[in-house]
Length: 387
Image 1 (cartoon, rainbow, N blue to C red):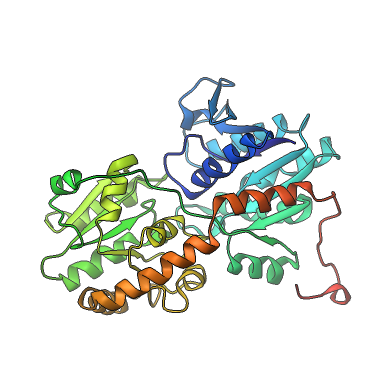
Image 2: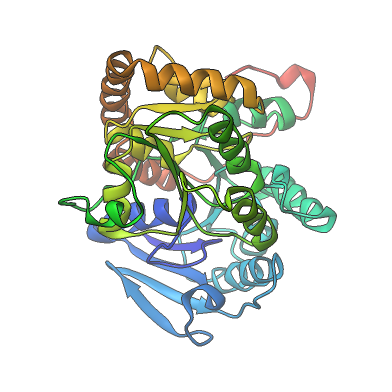
């Protein structure tokens, strides 16, 4: 098959779950003999317009974009949808924003199958203004109308599309990226960290992931002998990142490492005594899955995607948005290492069994291979049959 991918910033990935997912899935497809062209943003690849590069068998085409929040995503998605309108068997849009332009290949090339993956309800993210939210919600509606198949990465998203649009979707959860081998703890020592004696946060520094709540909870608890490391970079949220730095300023027990990769990321993650993700909005949190696959104990807010992963005593949950409950659960975790280890072992086995990139690639290719049919959208009460 000839596959076009639209809505991705760049490969190789730097940060973000969508890029990590594409970096795992599409090289596997290329190894199986499929042709994959991924249309990326020149503002992210730092290459000239229309310049091509390659990533493990995937052709990456840098399309025109502009380094202005939201505008670069909008323009690149439009260019990508147009470029993908000819010569492809599959056009796969990642995220609901780029899916606004799924109508272009649908109209221009009726024999091309349109697939959209919803990684999360992006219009709910705090960083976006009114115009961006309208664009993202319009993209969601366009995906429902134009995509032959919609993939979602969590059961909560599957329920959402059914309740909001009466649209059946395919649930294919993401899987964690594999960390590089690491030896020693030299990089951690440079930040004053002691193995198993620090809390770690990994993710984009954006309001919906609530690292500010975690900082405040940790400062209120002040566990003796423990520190906290926040790993992540800004994502069109430089003002918010500055507020985090101000919140942690002068606190020797809080370390903001910035964005990490390779052995440095592996070292800091593997040395953590507790991984905490306080988000109020997630699709399928890859950072949490990475922690689970490494056997790192997890504490997270009780939103639906987190409950799905941590059910059956695979981790701890606290009330979303509650600093007080985060403090209580973090304190319990720090003082019950044996119970926490049992949870981490169960979580690791669950992640290994249910979140495999080989399986995800196979399931996605099955969807690509399905005959093209009219999107399954319910238009009257008589058509409602709960999936």
